[in-house]
Amino acid sequence: MSVQSPLVEQFAHYLKFERHFSPYTSRCYEADLRQYVEYLTQQIAEDDAPTNGDEAALAQKIDARMAAADAMQIRAFLAYLDGFGYSAATTARKIATLRSFYKWQLKRGTIENNPMVLIRTPKQAKRLPKAITVEQVDKLLSMPDNRDTLGARDRAILETLYSTGVRVSELVDLDRSDLDMEEQTLRVRGKGKKERIVPLGTHALAAIRHYLTLLEPDPQFKGLRSRAMIDPSVPLFINKNGGRLSSRSVRRKLDKYLKAADLDSTISPHTLRHSFATHLLDNGADLRSVQELLGHQSLSTTQIYTHLSTMRLRESYEEAHPRAV
Image (cartoon, rainbow, N blue to C red; front, side, top):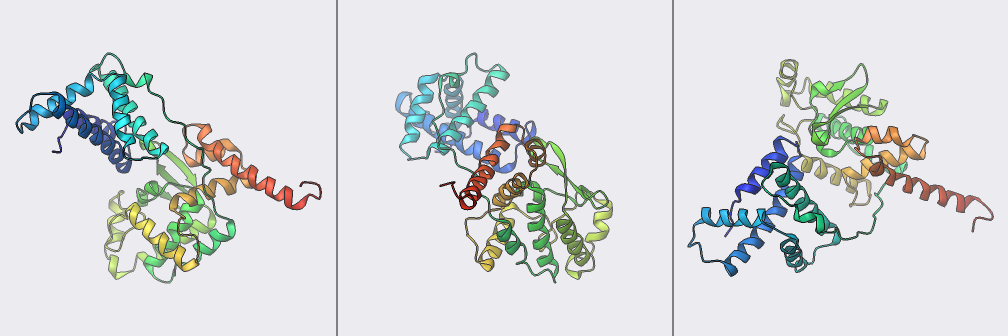
């Protein structure tokens, strides 16, 4: 039986409307906590008197167990998760969810002690972000046929992803009013609704301008121009029905062009973000500037890209220097 925990629902509301987490991130947190609720439901069925189908009574018991949790209960839940064969990264994410959940409860005063302070996160192998070469980027970006509106839109999307390094969730969230043609910038709403201004390269700017030039007179999107003049929330990149594109749609479009270009099918929109950062550092950009452009809160998050640049430098050195190897 799937039980709705009021405590989990309140936490989900907090993530969405106070912390401004993205819908995807919020869903991940909720899914992790639903698994915690399922585990506690099983424990209550084994330990307590039956609730005879009274969901409200069961939900109350679950919330009481969550509020009274100690490190032993959390470790028992983690042992339960072991049975699913999750990777260290997935387990670490679920632990992070519980940390946030209990930190929130402590802040609200619903618990006096945080059981997560005694829980360690499993060590994970550090994975370097994947980046593709400039030549591969050029090949990919040349694939969309920009003679029609939607093809021009796809070219503009790929150019923008690589030119700015924005996350795909940030890209689909862009409105027409976020584009400043004169200043050649985009206003981007990142994690936690924090805004940043990112510059647009000339290729991306030209691709967006071409896309909008085709969009305005297209009878399929009649009335969109006049609507955009009075409504600042009209999306910059529209779907075939004139509405806002989804992140999944962008991924599907990318898959189509990867196949056409005969490139690795595991390349994702995030790969273009990684490539953006790596290519900037390869060409001498300073780490702080790249941090600002990516919208990273911590410089340590950006520093992982320096490893890629160092690796490439080492490869070039070994290829070129007569006594390198």
